[in-house]
Length: 205
Image 1 (spheres, rainbow, N blue to C red):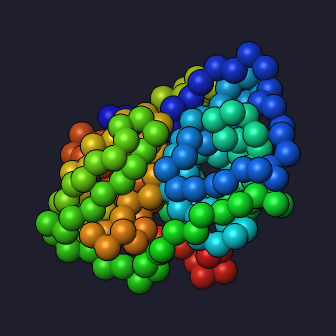
Image 2 (image 1 turned 135 degrees about the vertical axis):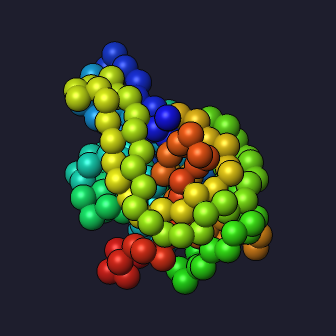
């Protein structure tokens, strides 16, 4: 059992820098403060507009600032659907941040054996197949450096054979045409579970 997000100790708060020269893109490393001394390292999954991006919901709560690898603030978590059993969070991008917008299939359907691929900050680029296309409620477990230490979250998701490890949470999962069709939630004993982006309410897209 492995949670896709990784928690890391930080000695000092992340540096808040001007986002004017930053380019936000899918696959980049992001850090979201968890407590005053810990942060979650995740992958930015998709830039869906000039003002919004997606990652995994368990990576951070609403209102938490989001930083890039260098500590520059790129945005804030503005919506989180974990409580609605959907492991997706929306990042409101900081003003003047350049955004490399991704193609997204908001109506994607999944078939057993379908080819999918992802790029996560830990395991990099990897391909796999859909092993169970049923969008059912699955439970993922993990570990955090902050209480309650042992964590779990439930989310409607599909099952894939993609390889993922701590830190890959939030990565965009794409179809053979390169369109984002899901957000990587976590690794389990059966494979990697992926949350379909089609379940994200239209008002949050």
